Amino acid sequence: GTAATMMVSHPLDTVKTRVQVQGWVPWRTLLHRPFLGITPHLVWYSMFNTIRFASFAGARRLVEEKLGFHGWVSAGVAGSVSGLVTGASLHPFFVVKAFQQATSTPLAPACRQLYEAESWRAFARAFHLSCMRFPIGVGSFFAVNEVARPSDPKSYFQRAAAGGLAGATAWTLVMPLDVLQSRLMGQPVAPHRMYHGAVDCARKLLRQHGPRVFV
View 1 (cartoon, rainbow, N blue to C red):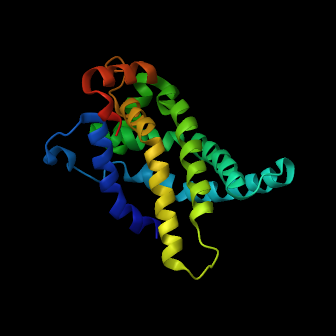
View 2: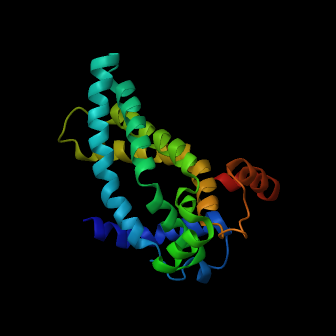
């Protein structure tokens, strides 16, 4: 199931990342070698849902027992904790994926370029943004899903619609951070880096493209 999902979704993710990093360049460039980065993406995705749901279940139990929160509040708080755990633990895979997609570099050369130029710090590019976007994204996903999900487990269409609404809400909230993260993770290695942190990146993007660059 995971491999089949990646075969469909990864090329779309590659196009998204390249648009965020390079802008609307010709389609031939956007679609060039669309499966670059699929190996770290596959590892990331395989572990993402396992860590996300396991940490969510444990965090929600603690939130309800220790803090007394229930319903969508407990779902949102537990989701934020789950997002922080997931985003922080899997971040290096995210960096390699985005760097491969943005620079059209195969896996081994990409890892070598990152490490030789920036040492282990290369695999922590935009780490603080992961620690922001995933708590926001996962927390809002579980909170909205908790509110919108029907009580009848056989209401398959309504449950699917609730999941879709939750996903759309999460992506809307994290898209500006996703743009910044793609730019920082996908930029060339030192000494040719274009941005020196998230604030510098945001300022330059706003100056060059205006607020629409974040959507």
